[in-house]
Image 1 (cartoon, each protein chain N blue to C red):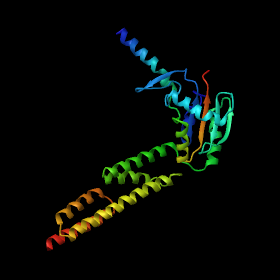
Image 2: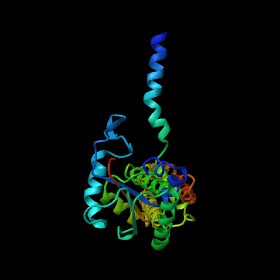
Image 3: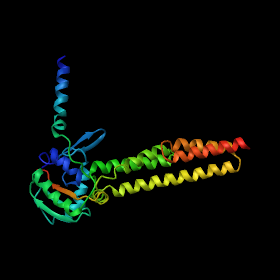
Image 4: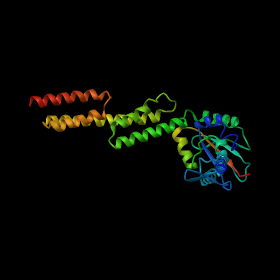
Length: 223
Length: 53
């Protein structure tokens, strides 16, 4: 199965709809260097100590005593076994069994979308922390735009909540700038609005900022 | 000249297993990571158990 299933094009494509765990207590097959790291020679995406640990953590959950190898187990999203087979399987057979598991679990999110959401949410969070509001907007908006992707709701909700928080922060900053205007501190009011305009460029909120700026300029002129 | 041909041939031979293998499915790095990711993505888990030889 190592060469006939796990590198099979159809299997690789289908496997993005699940989480895959390779378990083997053996490490005599050796390692190969990937970059600077010694990875498993059979499956260079993982280290031998990882497949050994996976085997130690999970084989006892599904097999008692000795079992035929290879063994395949398909589980729901909590790790509860739905079915298993001892002995070799073809790529097509594994895909069929995993389709049964998918049916039992319901709508989930594919690996590519998962990695996209994780990357964008992390980028959004970092940009927001660093005060790069425009970049944070872009990262979160990229996730919100994926709202039609099946299973995306939790991720889209997270991104939308982050966008709402940024908007709230913008409104607070706008109110602070207008308080400076009311205190006749026009220079700082204008500076605050200038930065707001940079941060919220291209957003509908930018119109409110422009309007506030015009008010500050008018007040300054009338003083 | 002969030496450089030999070097290229040796490099190609060494690279053959990687070239022949092609891209694989992504494997979790631990059982705990697999459980956490499956829960987060709401997807099933495919676990496979092997022995050398």
